[in-house]
Structure formats: C-alpha cells, structure tokens
Length: 206
Image (cartoon, rainbow, N blue to C red; front, top):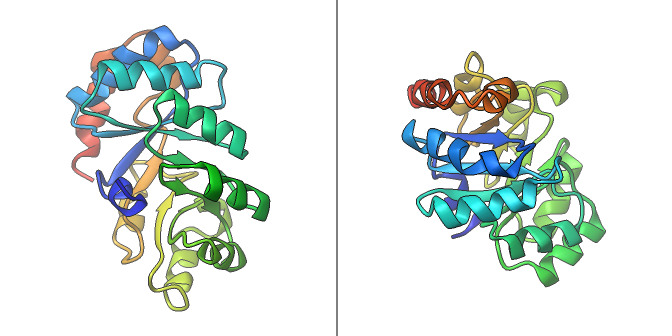
C-alpha cells in the first residue's frame, strides 16, 4: 500500500496516544465499530509500539501506522512492531536519507513550509502531513501551496476538529485530515468505548 492509498482510506485519521497498551485493542475495536478503518498510534508514550503490535494482531481490518516518529531508528522499530505506515511531525535530510534506505513501508513526513515540501519532493515523497496545520497557516497556506505544488497531497494535522475539518477536506490538495478528537484521553482512561464509537460514527458525516 502506497502513501496515497494510505491517506485515501478515510477522510479522517484518528491520532491516538495510548498510555496503557492493554487498552489498545478495546479502543481500536470501539473506533472500528464506529466505521474507522485507519489509525495513527503516536510514539509519544512508552506503550506506543506495543499498542501497534496488539492492534495489528487483534484488529486485522484496521490499517495501523505510527505517528510522532522523530528519527529513522524509531521508524524501523515501528515497522518491526507491525506499523503499516510512518508519519513524522517534521523533516530533515538525514531522516529522509536513513528512511529511504531502511524503510519498506510508506513514509508521510510532516512539513510546514514550501521549502520543506521541496525537500520531500527531492526524495520522491509527494504525500505529506501539514503540521501544525492551524498554526502555520491552515487552509490559506494549503491554497497557496496548490499552485506551485499541484501534484502534492496533504493530510493536515494539528488543531483540526469536527468544526473545521470540512474546510480542509474541501481543498483539492487534501486527501484527509488527522485529529485526536475521536479518542479523547479521558474517555480512554475511563474505558468509555461506547462514547468513542459515537464520536467515530459522527466523524463519518464529515
């Protein structure tokens, strides 16, 4: 599965931080019941990699990737844990070089400027994450990037919610958006899976 196919699975990619790996499968099943078909599990927590492995094992219908990947070593660890794609918050030459030689799954690097888009294109990457979307210009920036980079597709993340998601999804160069509003930390900790399923179902109308 290439990067564009990954970003075309759903209009919304839930960005999930799992504090306790033992909750990962129930969380994934709750989102799956709500119609979610793809997840980004961040590596912001110690249990992120284990959560990816558990979800891949118990929820084969979900496409599961790793987010907040900061270097090539983390990318390889995520790949070995079962991640099907890698998303980073930013980009640099060393990271791209190392990933190009050691990664067999799609890399979707984060960018926040035209210069970073050009850098990604040098390495053959045209499906990118705009981050932090709202803070770096949001819809206006994406419209500006459409002209010089008409072949580039984006997944804006950072400040995206149910209220503004559609303003991004209406853009020609946006395939999907990423957001954490489908899996609030407090609902996960309280194991309120039904509420998470409701949020997932609501997102299908976006």
